Amino acid sequence: MTTVREPFVRRLRTALLGTDRTALLFLGNFEVEQRWGGDELGLPKVALSAGDALVNRMDEFTLLLAGPDDYVLLKDAPDPGHLAYLESLGVGLPHLLITDQQDPHHTVTQDALLSPGLLARLTALTGSVAIFPHGVSADEEQLAERTGLTLAGSPAATCKAVNGKIYSRKIATELGLRQSTGWTCESIAELDAAVEQARGLLEAGRTVVLKDSYGVSGKGLLVVRDVARLEQIHRKLRRRADRSGDQRLALLVEEWVAKTTDLNYQFTVGRDGSVQFDFVKEAVTENGVHKGHRMPAGLDQRQLATVTETAGALGRRLAADGYHGVVGVDAMVDPEGGIYPVVEINARNNMSTYQVGLQERYVPAGWCALARQYPLHLARPLRFAEVRDALGPWLLSAAGDAGMVVQNFSTVNALVRAGDGPADGRLYGFLIAPTTDELMAMDGEIADRLAAAAEGARP
Image (cartoon, helix red, strand yellow):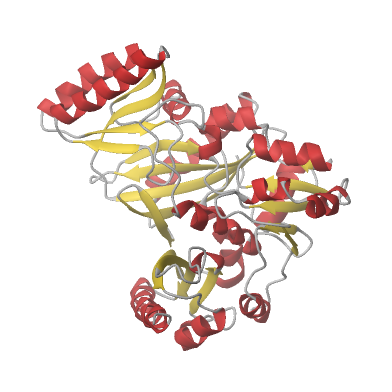
């Protein structure tokens, strides 16, 4: 396994296509796990929510990953003020393509498939552009088929198989990697056995967690602290199986272990089976939900070696199963400094993937960075110009300075509808400072200023 320092987007093209001369069409179909896991039986599903509309506007993260010769497909045009700001930072913006129409509850791919004008424009790019989605599902395969564009990455069936948490646990077991105590449940019979084992953990005062194999962002995850609750869930899943006659399941039961730090690391598996380690970052999470990343991860040499060696072993194993593309792995540091190197494998881009271009352009050697989301409660849409004025000197103005880059602005107004009353949005920022103390002080100041700007957007 080699570590390569050339620009990530060039390395990505070469790994996936064998050349860096073919442009990529970046497609931000976030939470693709919902498509992969749609027919899988795990914990009871949550109904469609307004939050889907916000997640679907995360498509704008692709703007700062793509190169100037690449294409980005979005559900709606970005705020012109945000684009102007990025250009003032020297960002070479990619070519923008917008869907003909957009349904807030559709992914960008689903909107694209319903956009005849866009499909015609994409068809005209055949031979010169390859589709690079956040993750490959049947939707992206259909888009490639209807436009004639090459699909960069593995087929949807391979991506789905590799991305499942059951796969992660089995592969980690096969490779002899450290894991928490746990059991995979691909049938009700396996669940029965796992519950019997987990009952002993709970009676000993420990905690367990049930995980959907295709859960994402804290969805499909249930922490259980007593036997009565475990048995209640067990009965519910058994009743569902008895009513339907379907004994299948896609669930994990694991011990909820102590940790001090969540980690996310990434490697890329090339078409030729090569494995390139990209990075490791500290993941900021809250109740299993991703909130951001801190850089650098602060690992010592022994911990870093564990991560990089695991990445190499996993990459070779995934390549043997026919996978090529970006891989993100969640890991943990225990209170004694030991590493759980595989909590789950993600056969897709990760939130951390979209930070690479910003790191390459704006984070000087030895400096610190923080990627995080700021919640905003709005009664009307907020323009980028208002955010720019509110942030003042804390908005990054040039490479080599301290400040924040607004990484995604479309999520600010994704849920705000005229006459519907207040709604929650998110602004995603990437903060840069020489030291951790300065970074945290900046974060606090920015949070206060954004809260004030949101207050100004209320009646």
